[in-house]
Every structure is written in structure tokens, then in C-alpha cells.
Amino acid sequence: MQNATAAPIKRTALEKNVNLQIIFLFAVLIALSLISTVGQVIKNFAFGSTLGYLVLGSQNVVTTFFLDMLTFWILYSNLVPISYYTPTYPGSSRVSFLRGC
Image (tube, rainbow, N blue to C red):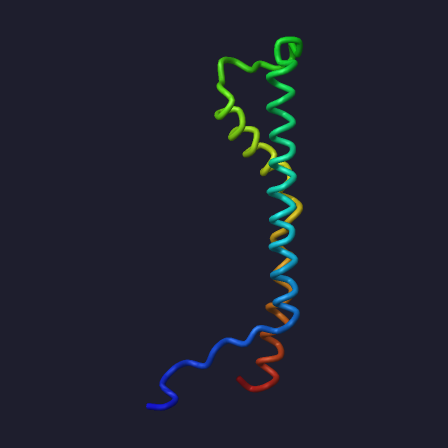
């Protein structure tokens, strides 16, 4: 019963580096979205009446903030591509196949 527990999964240095880069990219995405949202809210409420092409309606600041945040999140979401993390897995599976695991 000494070896009843499963062996921990070992992560390579490449996986750790890629994970840090993805976390950094998400932080950049959040920062860009927040900065753009704050700028958009300030512009809408400072100059909203003079911008005839915007149909602002009767939204309050909180609703406008979260809708703009969602808009900029979707707009900037191409900074973190889905395919960024996948190239490490085929390499790991090939190595484990060659080792006979």
C-alpha cells in the first residue's frame, strides 16, 4: 500500500513558461479593456449630447460601464489565441509514446 497514490504529473519548463505568458496576456487584456471602458464612459457622458451618431438612450453609468467592458473584452480577445497553448500537447504525447508509457 506504499505506492497506492498516483504519481504527480510533472510539468515541463516550457509548459510553465507558456502558462505565465497566457496569464500575462489575460492581464494585458483586462487592463486594455478597463482603460478603454473608462475612456469610453468619460467620453459618452462628457460629449454624449453632441455626438448625434450615438444612440445612448437612458442608461446609467454602471450599465454603460459593464456593456462597454464586455464590448472591449470581445474586441481585444484576439490577443489570447486559442491555439497558443495547444502546440505543447502533441510534443508531450510524442515523447511519452517514444518512452513507451
